[in-house]
Amino acid sequence: MQEKDVIIIGAGAAGLMCAISAGGRGKSVAVLDHANKVGKKILMSGGGRCNFTNYYAEPSNFLSHNEHFCKSALSRYTQWDFIGLVEKHGIPYHEKKLGQLFCDNKAKDIVNMLLDECSNVGADVRTHCAIEQVEKTEQGFLLTTSQGKWQCRSLVIATGGLSIPTMGATGFGYDIAKQFGLTVLPTTAGLVPFTLTPSLLEQFEGLSGTSADASVSCNGESFRENILFTHRGLSGPSILQISSYWKPGDSIQINLFPDIDLFQALKDSQQARPKSHINTLLAETLTKKLADRLTDMWFGDIKDKPLAELSNESLQRVAKQCQSWSLKPTGTEGYRTAEVTLGGIDTDEVSSKTFEAKKVPGLYFIGEVLDVTGHLGGFNFQWAWASGHACGQEL
Ligand code: FDA
Image (cartoon, rainbow, N blue to C red; front, side):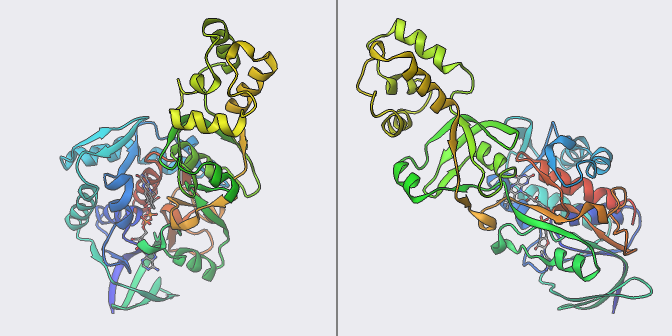
């Protein structure tokens, strides 16, 4: 039997940060993970360079049933605290865009940093450790694992969400929550590409890899970045962002000309270049391939006419279609490619200060397993660092 003050299940972003935080306060800590490597999602994140935080992280970047829940932890361990840690370890980084911070070299720099910090505070980090059973005892918790029995006063669940099952994601955290009578809110894939109907895919054939700067809206939210045509449907940052607000059956609205009044621009062009055609004008902003395809799809009846011959009504139709293109995805690519899981353990069940389950003293939940989901751009890691740190300070 091995005994620790604190056992953390899940050696991902939140679990490792929690170990550093609790270990730094003199607690004996073990981190147990069933995978063959720690921090696999950190390693694969940000195209291998890990978008580890965001200069502009704040509570409004997070979705949750309780929008206030994330505030306390985010204010106690901010992006500046994590940047300080990165700088202490001499890890080179840069801002890519919109406050998103990436490693100059490899995401492995972040994992090595976390493991160095764990080792400094004497945390025992184990991989290949399958958790077979968790029982509550008078002293705390008893764990039966593939590496023997473990006992602890405090048990922290940091097993993340369901996205990318091939990377070791499981519903373990939700199962433990249910075992102890806590509510788990329905989960769905977030930050995920959309799939489209076969007929739309046919119309978009050959566009795979084409992108456009667009503003995408759904359910009162709007994001402005690139959209990307794929062979399954639509992806790109603004699509991934809006996917977290989309529900099955909803349409999304895409504005392919977010900076201008397109009708006015068409009217001006009608005066200045009366012999031009619609596809030529659209290609001044969109790629030629996309402009030609959309013109064929939407404006076949007027595409061969010069602007001078087009009525105001026709120009209005062009502007409306391009600036509020309404499209109904058939679904998403699901957990296979999603970056995060929406929903999860109901935050009403957990203290926002300590992350302890209100009904089960000694049991804690941190990171993505909770019903807190960040926007794209380094916010999900910031939540993992902040919740892990805050919990570690209270163990
Ligand atoms: P995380 O998933 O990191 O860790 C959970 C750990 O628990 C894993 O090590 C897993 O093996 C372990 N585990 C699971 N089940 C277990 C079980 N039954 N027994 C034992 N151990 C178990 N975010 C961001 O801010 N910037 C970015 O650049 C990216 N990029 C990105 C790319 C891709 C492809 C994905 C899938 C995700 C991202 N994210 C991201 C999201 C980010 O990776 C995610 O939100 C955090 O890793 C969540 O941290 P957690 O520690 O909560 O879970």
